[in-house]
Amino acid sequence: MQEKKTITAYKKGLREVILETAMKAFQEKGIRAVKMDDIAEKLAISKRTMYEIYATKEELLYEGVKAFRERQKAKIAELSKGKDLMEILVKCYRIRVEESHGTSLAFYNDLIKYPRVLRFLNREKMHSRENFLKFFERGVLEGYFRDDINYDLAARLFDAIARYVMEQRLYSQYSIEDLFTNLSFVSLRGLCTEKGIKKLEKLL
Image (cartoon, rainbow, N blue to C red; front, side, top):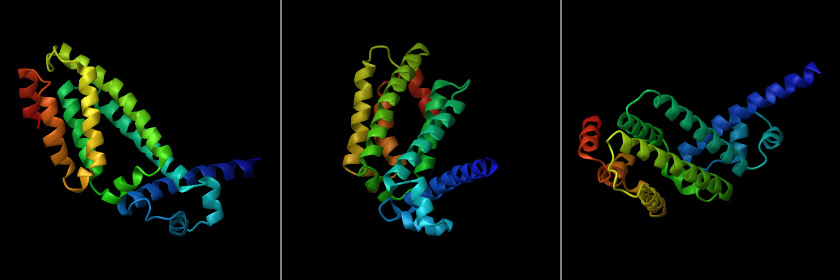
């Protein structure tokens, strides 16, 4: 019984190591450039062990993206405690920029070729829209955002901007900072009251 528990604990630990190693390699080189065998060789484990833990590359990528999103949400939730609304917004922006550094263009190009991962990201986008609406409702109450805006429509427009960036692969031509400054923040500024604009400009 003790031996079985030891094996289970070992595989659980190995699962996390594989996930971390694979995601780092995917982000640096692109997903298609990294083979499952490459990861097994890097970790000095057998191919059989590798495939027992993660049957396919898509399963591995899916679990990695899911774990990344959970860490991201936890980080944002922690940052949001007791903070001013506009401070939260700018901190979230800076987190996104920091996360983009060191990630190859090939990773973004390859990511959309995996249906299961894409479905997960689309579900996350719907959840993000709900949070987006709550965020702006709070902003209206605090006087940062205008009260004459249809924020459901605004959320759809922000989704359209994000979709356009991915479809046109603008991330390969411009930095994340440029995309946020010239697309997201220009649009966001139009939703702000005078108080909101002053606060946003001060923080940026």
